[in-house]
Image (cartoon, one colour):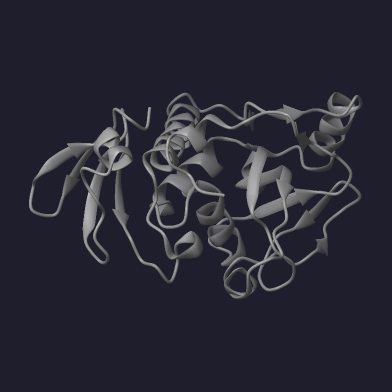
Length: 220
């Protein structure tokens, strides 16, 4: 999706994600850009103080952003009570279904939360992350912990769960700044959305898979 994304600058000039990847076009600091996902239009503004390592988002990262918001749009439109969204490189534990049922029993009302993180990576290597994206572990019950500000670090999310109220609230706040994962954690950590993390499910990423998003410009 990222290469074919239509993007429009604040002067009305249009280009595409493939132009960003090729280096033909560049985002400029402080300017606003419209990113036209199929059903949702996002506003991207490159702010180095919020961006990962200060860099602008790539075509692949904007494509991933659109993929996620399009799922949220579908969940909201069709009023799905509960969906689980996985990245394509997840490895599920053998007892995943059992643990997921435990979560559903512990919080059966889909209106009581906006998002549940089922699997994520923690990042500890950069000081700027320590000041911006943090998770505090507050027990909620045997299955879940509440997510809020200023304890711990989070880098990437590869499995999460939500229903249509959460999709609607996230869509009302989400705009690209540091990528879909970091921006989701920013909402959670600022208490704009009610978020939990699982205590016992161990969803992991496959170590032998190369992400397609790397081929579209993401640096590691």
